[in-house]
Length: 88
Image (cartoon, rainbow, N blue to C red; front, side, top):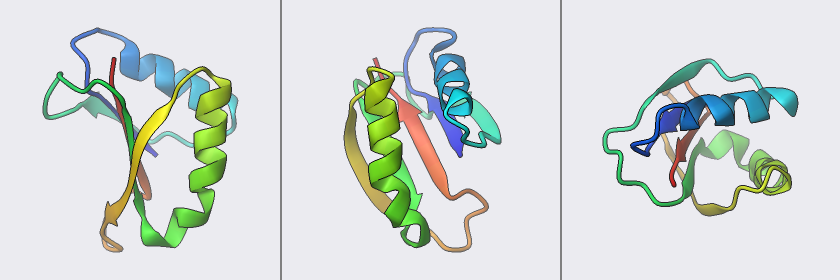
């Protein structure tokens, strides 16, 4: 999993990394998103891991985050299976 901080707030991405690691997920990358104007949590996944979408959304909801959108547009050749963009 990669986390992208899509907010102007320092540390929002790191908070998400800590939460996901507490749930047992492997987070391999943390960086800023292309823009800091994201308002919601967006999950991008490969089609091959779509079965984990409900589990991931549930875990994020337990941590008081709401996923506003999920897309299956990561290519099979992409090194990452899941990218989560953190919004405000």
